[in-house]
Image (cartoon, rainbow, N blue to C red; front, side, top):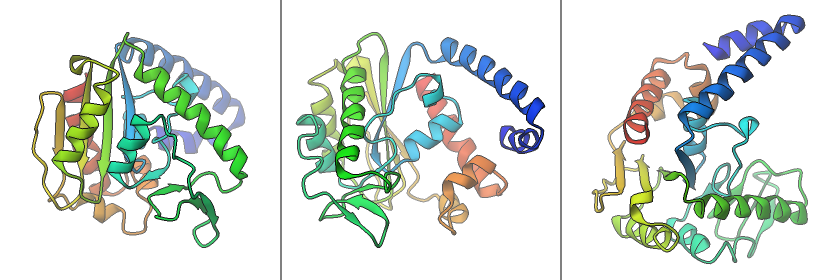
Amino acid sequence: MRFVLNRIFKNIPILNSFYKAFLNYIDKKYYDKNCKNYRIIPLGLYCMPRIITTLNRLKPSKKYGEKTCPFDLAFFRDADYNIKLIDTHFKSLFDDIFFYKEINAWTNNEGTIVFMHEAGLSLEELKAKYKKRIDNFYEYLNDKTRKIFFLIANQTPITNEQIEKLNTVINKYRDKKDYSIIVINQSKEKLQKTSENIYILDYTQDSLFEEFNKQGNWVLELKKQKLKSAKEFYKKLTNQLEEIIT
C-alpha cells in the first residue's frame, strides 16, 4: 500500500511533503513503542535479513536512528569466515580486497565478500565506512538493555556445526538468554535446531523466492508485492519472524 501511495504523492509536491511528514511521525511513534525492547542484527549471508525486517517494520530504518552494521548490505558468503570476523573484531575484513570491474564492486580474491553498493568509493573511503559499521556492530552487541535477534539468510548450505560455532562466539559477549539466532535456510540442505536460542526457518522446499526472483529483482518485487509469489513469501516469512521476535 505504501509503495502505491508513494508513487501517487510523488507527483504532487505539496501533498507529498505533508504525506512524508505524517508517515515519519506515525512511524517514529510505532518504532518507539514496538521496537524498544529488542534489536535485530543481520549476519549475512546476503542482505535478505536487513531488507525483509525493514519492509515489515520489525527493524527501524536508518532514517529512524537505526545504525547500519557490517553484514547488513553486502554479500558475506562464507559462514566460517563471518564467524572469524566477529571473533577477531573484523581484523581481516580488507585482506586482498580489490575493485573488480566486471561486477562493478569491491570484493576479495575468494569472492566470499562483495560490497555491492560502494562502487563509487575509494578503498580508503570503503574502509572508513565499514569501520563505522563495525563500531556500530560491537556497540549493539555489548548493549545489554535489549535482547538481540541475530538474523541469517543463506542460499548456499551452512551446517549445524557452523551455527553452533557462531553461537559460541556470540556467547563470549552475551548470555544466551539475552539473544537468539534465526536462520532463514533457503539452501537445499536441511538444518536441525540444536540449542534453545536457535530458530531454523526451513525454506529448503520453498519455490516462491525463485518464482519472483527470475529477473534478479527480488528486493523490488518484495517492495511492490504485485506478484502472488512475492506476497506469499513476504507474508509467510513475516509471520514466522513476528512469532519469534514480538
